[in-house]
Length: 347
Image (cartoon, rainbow, N blue to C red; front, side, top):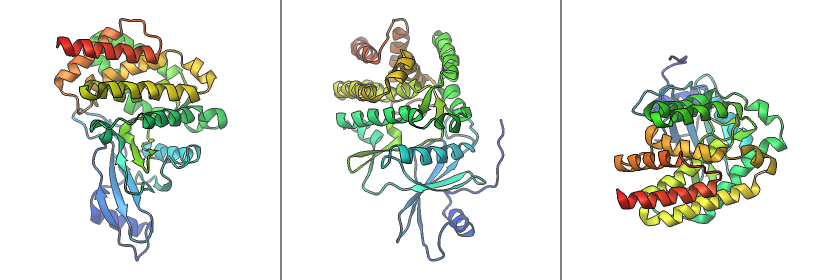
């Protein structure tokens, strides 16, 4: 697989980035910006740009080969989709999304407003055992607004109809690859892939995760929109629910609180979701939750905090739950918790 390369610009190189900004008139001659490469993401180079006399930026440059142990490729043109997502959602959930500063399609680079300090990454807080249920509720309410968006603006369906990047960064590495690694789940995952491609009825974030949330003055700020698309919103539930449940698995001392967060997240989301969308979604959120729980221990992007024992246990639990008839997310949360308790005692 090959992608077009415009040049060898690397925004993580301060000298190259400064030259790029000056040559393209992105900054004034008097500006003396300071650059800090931000770590943690696998699909982009990301740099915090600090100014003395104007608001800071965060710049992103899409990579064609992602920074993971196995080969994983995606066209860098997805940065254009991220820019479209920023523009759309900064109006839809104002104050909860950065503002787009500029998009350079030729270099596959964008700049957005930086979230002022102090702020903290929600994933980091969760892994430290900070379990604020009210944040989970807000997380659910914001997702419901995203999923309801096309009901307010019918043009969203056509604006985000392209699903190429969702295929490259989600369906293939999470579901299709996992199907090759876990034969017992292969038929389930292949059926889910086919169903997901057909179920296109709402705006879906595609990467709705605590990793992509900053906490600023007690408010959630949502990041990373490179796989936003018009499709199956149940994927967002599965992808995000997996983080609460996997942390309940990992942090046993905080298990009760993570289970409570998962339940309250779902409750707040369901309360604000349009009734028609809820009916259309049906039980697919359960299927996506099970698939993501499995993919995050057997797919191309496993959760880094789960060791081999955790991954093996979570895989066994998911395979066990796939044999049951679980119709709702609350049933799934209860069943996963019960399996955790049982497997922890017997392992």
